[in-house]
Amino acid sequence: MQSKETSRWMRQRGGVGMAAGIILSVLMLAGIIAWLLLRPEHRPRRETGSILPADAVMVFSIQPGKLINKAGLPDLLRDNIDLLGGAGMMIDPNQIASFADITRLGIRDDKPVLLFMQPGDMGFVMGLVFPLINRDAFEKGIQENLPGELGDQIIKQMTEEQGLRGIFRGREPIAFGYDDNSLLILVEENSRGDDLGPRVHKLFAQENGLAEARPAFRKFMEKGDDLGLWMDLDAAGELIPSEFAALFSSTPYFPKGEQTISWRFEPGELLMEQVVIGGDALPLRPVDPSLLDVIPANAVLTAVGGIDLAEVDKQVSSLLKDSSRLADILPEDIPLEKVQEFIENLTGGDELDLNEQLTGDLALALTDFELKEALFIKVPLPRLYLAGAFKTREGADMEALTRQFKIGETVGLEAFAGDDRIHLASPKFRESLEESGAVPEPVTGPARNQLTTPSAAMALNFPRLARVLEKFPEAAPAIPLLDRMGTFTATIHTQSDASRFTFRLTMQDRKTNVLRQVIELIMNPSTSDPLEEDADGNSLPD
Image (cartoon, rainbow, N blue to C red; front, side, top):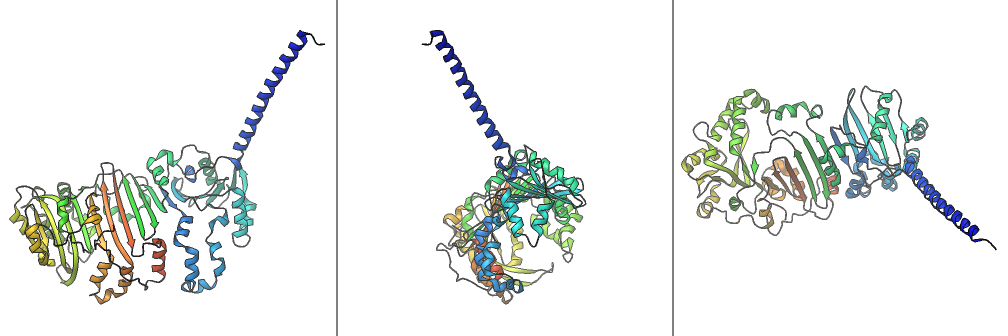
């Protein structure tokens, strides 16, 4: 029989052993978790955007999986393989689906492929980032799907460094590396792989990339649009064509700071959005809603907005004084002095300050046009069928303004005064505008609402344009294309720190994705669907 002291000693030793066992088990579990997390092939998945350098000046994003699916590319190619000519004879129709499947190369089809530009030692470094399924899938993909023995040759040249596999050295101006999540390829003209390899490692190891440095870029990536472009316009000057930069760089409204452009393809609709962050705010604001009564419901082209005339006058005066700037903009066959005279007459010259007479609110709508003989600027001028209004300030000189707008007579328009506006319109609209300030059937409903909130808005109705163009034989080839299209709208929303431009293209077929429709039009532009007008007959889509 054990004594009480012996039993107590055994219980104490047993308790200590149990505690030690628990601690040891916890340490072993922590070690296993750490090992699993720190192994390169099992690191937590990083988004491809986290590899982008903080000093990137441009990023182009493309979602190949989305675009292939939205275009229905395999079926589209299979149905139109005869249009590919000789190239189509080399394609096995049964293999088209596999050709369009980028997952065969170990590349994910649910994440964007990113192309970026970054300042380098020899100019700009161009980089490509591909999201990978995993390392094994990528290596198997290039071995089995690249032509000939190219895949095997690439695998043989690769080494493993710092948890990455790739080719980090060489005489060619290229280097690449990949982990379990992403593939990064860098190219720099007049450089060497020996110089680019360290840059690959640096980008994979960085903790704070472009998304952390630029909130606008992070929001741009979070949208997940089909196509996208982000640019630091101040740093990417060398990437902008010199002709474009020279044309607009002298104006305060030339985009500065950051800019994003995104495209989204939907059933029957293409949406493009451009956001400019920085630079001076555009001299625009929403139009006075009362002017929308002058827009006919069946308008072909509509434009509305509110303009800061004082700011515009300052810029126009500067342009007229600098003949060299104006000459750079104009074609060679248009006399500079005639254009200067035309602008001075339009803006009132020294006799009439339009900013003191007009608020800057305007609404214009075109319903038809014809072409007239060429005039002094050697350009055929149209005869317009239009209704428009310009809102006047209290106490405005209505007679002087009416004389000023008589320049519209050159294109078949009449200028006349209303209660708080100057009308510029075709004779057929005059009676109604003088009596009520409105056309007989003004735009209504959602189409009208879409014109009230933007700082400026424009709408073009393609089927109505087709009916107008039917009187011109040379336009006949374009009629079937226009009949398949719906409307194009452009709106501008301005704020003190940013401007947003939205462009929307709709098609008559609202069920088929617009990307597929556009590709079909390119492949076979002669086909046309019957025209189906909207019930309300408005220019803007509901």
